[in-house]
Length: 274
Length: 176
Image 1 (cartoon, rainbow over the protein chains, first blue to last red):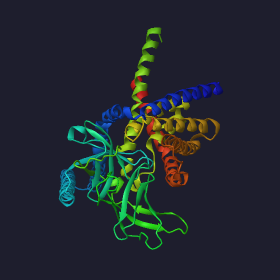
Image 2 (spheres, rainbow over the protein chains, first blue to last red):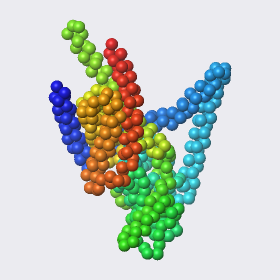
Image 3 (tube, chains in turn orange, red):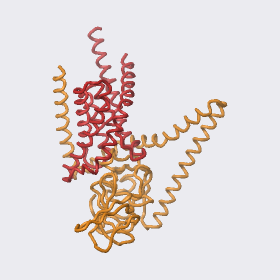
Image 4 (cartoon, rainbow over the protein chains, first blue to last red):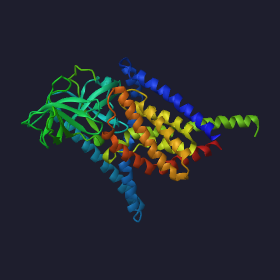
């Protein structure tokens, strides 16, 4: 009986696997990028609600903590205290948002690009897909291929766009490639992601190396990204004798886990399809 | 129970069973929105924990049917084709079922099956990704987070089972 149940489970597993393999191969086709983006847009409202709940979770925990500590005192005072704390948390959040928007304005002035600020509502499920879902889409003038940055530096590019949301392929994505150069050494190479970290590949030069702490900026070569945006900071660089290419590890200045607001550069359209 | 009453109970059971599908869907949404905010980028995978826990409690087939919607939600929140995450969660459910049915030991098996499910999930995702991109597997580059995810998922799986059982009881109470 148990073996029969196991056989049935294996049958369901194989059947579903075959169906999902077919779905994967079909939806991978470039002509289906539009419908795929539309489907993705359909879960954006749920993601936005969950994101708001995630932001509020910290405040809720704090409020419960306050109530526990003030239980001995008057209930009315405890309620007032909790209300004041909630207001303070909201005010802090507003100040932080204002600060982020002010920095967005500074970014616009510094780099001379027009930007649209967007909130991050979801992130990739695991370190293999460091993607972001933002709450702005084609209805806000966004298109696939547009460059996404944060006040700290380059974040990635829009891979797919639906009317009210967009999927951003970040620099840490294994398929991401950015032509970049060292700000001090001038060494040019390619920065690439491997899911969780960034690395840079440069041609071997006997006299020049990338030094730890050196900033790496986008070079603009290839036209995929504008020149001069911060890609990362060199953490380590290993010089290997007799190798034609040298590799370095980069620290990504945009903290993936706390990235709440990003800036989409709308007046730089990449000529290269994402 | 009369024949009509029996049919009515079956219909009610069918309806309330669908209510439980909210659990894997919510787990997948939480994985996309909450977990990445955790310190260290969140190495755990709530969707894998939920599927492994349900498989341990209800069997492989039930786990597979939870894996499908949760995986599709993960696919909708991630870059690329639709299907790889659902495939990976199916593999996780199947392996969790295999471990649960072959290893005796009651609830002690649960962390083991959750850890095995996490490794199966990551392996399936890496293989599908490598096939689609025609690239190498990058096993060394991903071994670190997979190990941490397996440990976290193993630790949290018993908690998830408690939550799922509570939800199951609540649904059962609705039936009566």
